[in-house]
Image 1 (cartoon, rainbow, N blue to C red):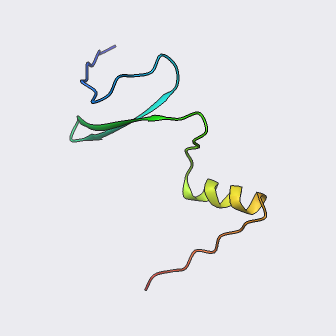
Image 2: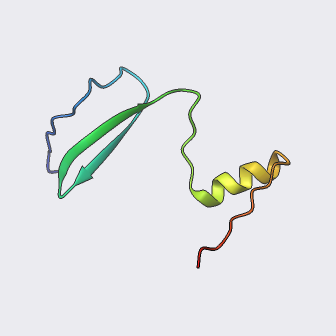
Length: 62
């Protein structure tokens, strides 16, 4: 297995999730996700809002 070493712009937490943004194979930013944050696709987000009885209607841009 090939090893890669990257310099991150932040210190990684001992536990948790960190989102790392790259461009052309180089780290551009990193963000530590807080425990109360949720990462979802748009479809998952819309599903959650519908389940919470707070449906969101998306308008199509022309």
